[in-house]
Image (cartoon, rainbow over all chains, first blue to last red; front, top):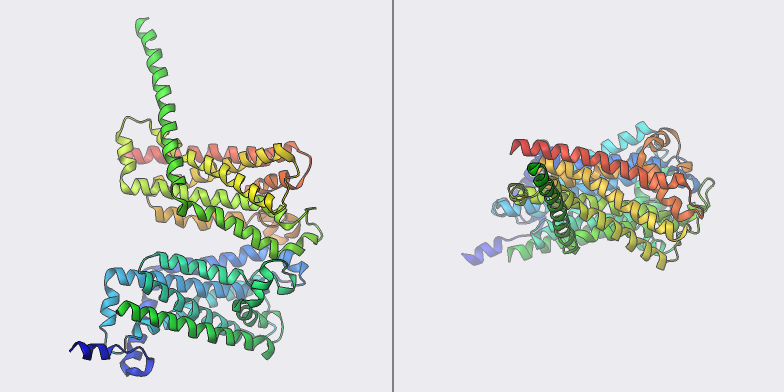
Length: 268
Length: 273
């Protein structure tokens, strides 16, 4: 009996068709939670909007010196990625809460593979990332941001935001499953903050001097930001696109493995 | 006559005991904060990290037209680091007060024969001390990286005093929310508002590089003057009365206003008890 139960512990997505149903329900539950507990979601919306306005005003002169005349073109993509990543932090909070209330154990008993408890939140974070993406972009366009890259520019921004949401939530989930305390959410926040700001978040790479420059050059987030920004700063080109897509693919794989291993260690 | 003579020592005794109680509670509050390095660390680490990050990211911006004459962007950013430290620290001090209320320690103090104002002022004293400590640590750390305070020792002392007053004013304001709600979450949740005020000022960039509606907001935000006053001590050789007004008088006025609000919140809470 124990062996049979052990064999049921499947972690692949395609192991059981019911897994997809469980994932869909988890996405739905995550969206319902936004309506039921708006206070938990609002900061991930309000902070990027605020940051867009504050940075766009405070650092406009600095960016103008770097030949970027409209600061919002620089900060709309950054704020969109931050909104998407903040959602991941909320997901880590929600997971820890589910662990504490015992709801996570009920999820583990749901039909389908165990992987649904990982892929469900990952999918939910990508769906939820669309909300800050739309609102921050709208505020940016109202404020005067331009999109010379057109529809392709919007697509690259969307790909970058969803990719960041996926990677950040994979990391947050992996930490939450290992630590099982709210400190996981705080650590996720720190990781997101450092990953974003030790890149070209504030200024173009050519303008950065000193210790941040080599880190920003190696930081995959620099490529993801380039992908997100290219439509706002000019035409979309493959040269500015592939690096960001590759970074998302590699980070996405690593963070998913981290989350699934976290689930395995939780099961043990 | 006998009654009048007898009253005076009692009144003096009460006054002395209120001072003693305030000092004892202040000591508890200061030690309580210093004994929690994990809670205190972010208010030291983050401002220094931001200063180092900005110095690297915006180092070339110091050559932009309109930017004040500075040795490095780090020198320009010293005042911003001190301000951030004071703001960060103030939030956690007020959150500590909210924890006291939530855990019932506050009510035990209230039912004890301790002067009520002493309870509040004693708790707030930790912000004054931590603010001074932060400013000293930041200036020492940045001095090791070559940042000089051009106005000399008087400027250094003025920055420390200013940081203490900013910290006290902010923690008093945040304590008002702590007393009103008794919830550490609400106090922590107020931090973004503080963050908003700081970014809508000239704390991180000079006003000369700002334009449009944002510039108007920055012009009317008192935090801009506070930051510029503190920065004036760092980047200007000559001491001016205006800089003292900006760096010392503005936070002092803030302290008085915030204390009035805080004591009003305290009276209301006591009336509900």
